[in-house]
Length: 140
Image (cartoon, rainbow, N blue to C red):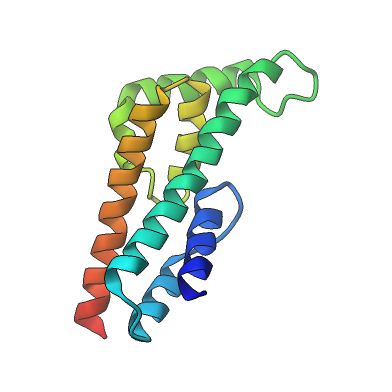
């Protein structure tokens, strides 16, 4: 049950909804749960949450000519230019607070190939959780 809780915490944290999985991860580590399973649960949940953002971004394109669409063409263009500056490799940093989640949404808008998206996001998030767990082992 603890691994499932971590999975959903990480999933939610990766979407545009507010959330944080670090506290749950480190608390479970401190309670003696297996490091590999914690890493796998957090990485999988967080990566799949980012996949939701990618899908929403991909589907968002078809509504940009509607009156209720939340972004102006200028905002969409600015996001496109920023994304192109950093390219798909920037998805390795999709774990960053504040900018990471919207960046995965923009990747969908920009129609980044899903297999590349999944690989880069999973590697970035996996490395982040591995680092957090290593820090947790040193601190606790």
